[in-house]
Length: 273
Image (cartoon, rainbow, N blue to C red):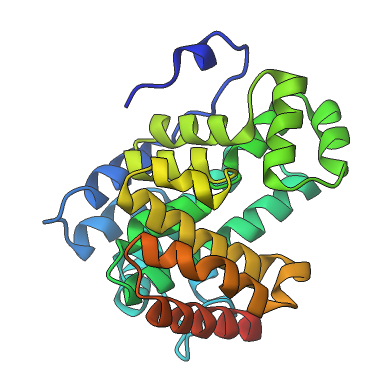
């Protein structure tokens, strides 16, 4: 899936994917790859490996035993979660630090982790779910890096996702969802993830235009955003489930299993946070 030609004509640069993450994406696309190979790739970058171990030991993961190496982290959390965590750290390092970006990456880490854990219980690919959660708002970081002052002003206004994308197109000629999808492609991740990031701001009725795996990723992401990351919506979970029940059914997710998995994961992450 090539990057849309109109994005190539804009004077907005996408950050290059770190070499370690290029190798990592190839490993995660190989069904025969091993935990040993994954750990070896991460440990070629000492700073990255140290950051991974430090984060695995944080309260977010709730491990009872402190881990000392990437190998141990993979043994406790699995390949997908450690690979996703490595991508999160790579994303943070690809952009200048700022309060806006700190908020984006903090939410991305929690979203990706929650989506991965929910997906694993629903027979949905946890790696696709985690990277969809991580890159959901990555395009906002691209626009911020492109024009910090203008995007800070734009971002300060209250928007839902669709309205924010419309405002971005008016101001920059491109939305964060389109840029995020392009970044997913340029960083070597799958077409399903790129499509889910691109379609995320659309209303659920428009998701039917996407392939079934993409619709599943969008539905899981919508539940996590509403019940874990949106203070206004998570105060009224009944309305969230009323909205998502028909969507889950049409994309092949057993609603009760989806609801139970989501509630368990969100409750645990709320307690750990």
